[in-house]
Structure formats: C-alpha cells, structure tokens
Image 1 (cartoon, one colour):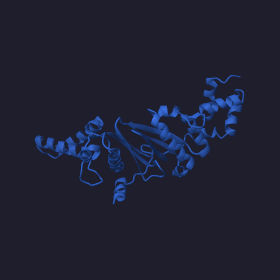
Image 2 (cartoon, rainbow, N blue to C red):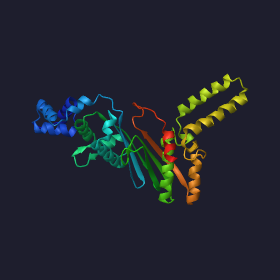
Image 3 (cartoon, rainbow, N blue to C red):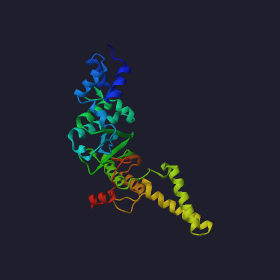
Image 4 (cartoon, rainbow, N blue to C red):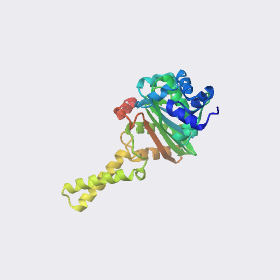
Length: 305
C-alpha cells in the first residue's frame, strides 16, 4: 500500500509524532494505521502528543554569531532541570547555529537537522519523546550588518552561548573589530539590565506613546496649572519617559551618567570612524509566558563592581 500525504497527516494527528517519523512508520507497517501507531509507541515517539498540552516556560535562550551575522533562539521546556540536560543544551546550541541561515521561526522549523534525516520540527518532537518534557521552539531573531559587528552577550550563562537572558547588538562601522566588540558588550550588558522598549524615539510603539501622553495630560490638567505651563509639564515628562524606555536616550548603567547615544558617539571619535547602533534584540526566557522577575540591573552592576 502506498503511503499518501493524507495517511501521514492522519497519523500525525493521532500520535503527535513528526511527519518523517509518521511516514516511516506507515512504510514499515504497510500503511496499517493502528500498527503504525504501535510502531511509533515502541520507538517512544507517540508519547510526545501526551506532553503537548503542558505549559513550557523554562528552558534556554541560545545565541550564535558568525562574521557579521548573529541569531538568538528560545527553546522552552517545562522545568529548569531540563536546562542542565546536556542533550537539551546541545539541541539549543544547534538551533542557534541553524538560525543563522533562517529568516524566521517558520523557516527554521523546516531546516534539515544535521545527522538525523529529520527537519527541526520533527527533531523537536523526537526530543520531547526522549527527554520527557513538553518543549516549544518559541521564537528566533536574526541580526546582520554589512560592515561592523554583531556582538552577543548572555547574562548569567548556563553554558557557552546558553542562558536565560540573551542579547545581540548590531553595530555598523569600519572601526576596528576589537573596538566594536568591546563597545557592543557594554551596550548589550546595559540592555540586559534595562530591557529598553525600542532603539530610538521614532521606533516606539505609537499607541504606547499616545497612552503615556494622555495620562500625563490628565495629570497636568488635574494640577490646575495654566495651559501653557501644563503643556511644558507634559513635554518635560515625555522626555523623562523616553529616557526610561528608549535605548539611545537611556543613561548607561556602566558609568551612571552618559547617554547611550553619547557612549556610541564618543567611541566613534576615539576609533576615528562613525559607529551606528543599527539594531538590538533581547530575549528573556519565558517572557510573556510565565517568569519570575528579578533585579537584573543590580546583578549587572554587581558584576561590574
């Protein structure tokens, strides 16, 4: 009996196993659906479906950099215990390297996973079965510059390129690579500590800005100040808001007094070449799912003291 796409789809829905594993199971059992399910069960692959509903908010963030390109991925699992599993760590490291040649998470999932004959999505299913926890390849991001450096930083790294908070900083410049790496690490540590909402004022979410301005306007009105003074109050407070959430406007946690924009400008002057901060990305493990907040600013400050 030929193995059709419809049969593979049906077996995937029944077992939760990966597409290539389902195709192989049907081939091994002559297309018999029940026998194919049993075949997957004997291989430990059907067990993954039972785990798919469980919350996965732990795991690891992984970072990989090659030349002027860098990628960061987040692979979630159910417990922090699995993050110490060498097989899981190796999987995350491999995913981060593969992400260097992917444009988004969907494309990454279709990449062939080295040495397995499976793609990334099916290898993930295999790992769920063998490690015994639900897992989710949640997100990835790629940064690249034409000239300069993409600099990685992992806060409190679990292993090389692996941890809970990963940051990438993309610097466009013809300056010496060592200068860019040193500057990029400083900025990345700052980003890990402060979690800025955007790179520049122009990049801020328009709805968030409008909400903040509306709140400040109401506060100014409630103060009973004259219109002209109230408007100045709002503009002054908006400037303070930008200094809190916009990376280029923030005060560096490294020296506690220099704006990040000025840190970059000063570094460019010293290097004799313009340096532009083109982009950054910060992944905090489990962010938006379930996570426990801690004072990362204090931790970074402690590392620097």
